[in-house]
Image (cartoon, rainbow, N blue to C red; front, side, top):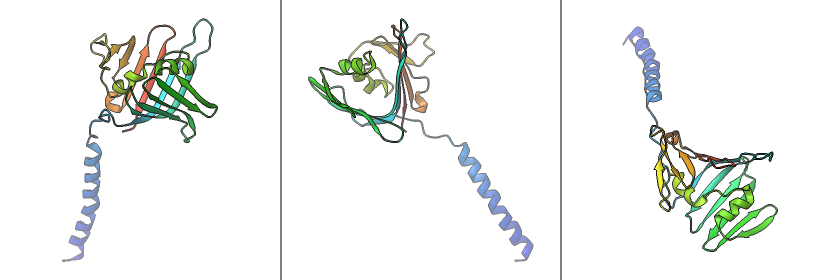
Amino acid sequence: MTLLPRLRQAAAWPSIALAAALLAGCASAPPWSPAPLGEPLSGRLSVRVEGVDGAAARSLSAAFELQGDARNGSLHLATPLGTVLAQARWAPRQVVLTTPHGESTFDDLDALTREVLGEPVPVAALFDWLRGRPWPGAASTALVPASEPGFQQLGWAVNLARFDRAAVTAQREQAPVVTVRAQLDR
């Protein structure tokens, strides 16, 4: 083989590699699907309670890991650098919150979120909402307009418009407005 055909052959490899890379770049990622019920969920979570009657808005943003179910489980909240902000664990008739300031007990998850955020957040329903479906413990209806993916449940609008990108937003419209946003790990 003379030098020219070898150069043409060698020059073809980068072109083939470039074409393969471009085709791979065009391939779509597999659709996101949440962990099955019982498997932990993790990601980033933000909760914002709007101010009412001159009161300042309150917000919390943290990395989270949610394990278990509405009867027995735990929720860990941490800063982006991994510093633990709070750990909640629950079982029937007892909820324990541990923070750097100590430990507190509550009768239920609603009482815990009411104390921490000033408003109750339906943690029991979050297990299902973060998986893109209504909680089976209460009635639900489709969002209006029906073109919006999601549902209404327990006085909250759960928007699933970005669910394919592992994002869920739940908003309680009753004053004060409470917004929970979750960006789940894939």
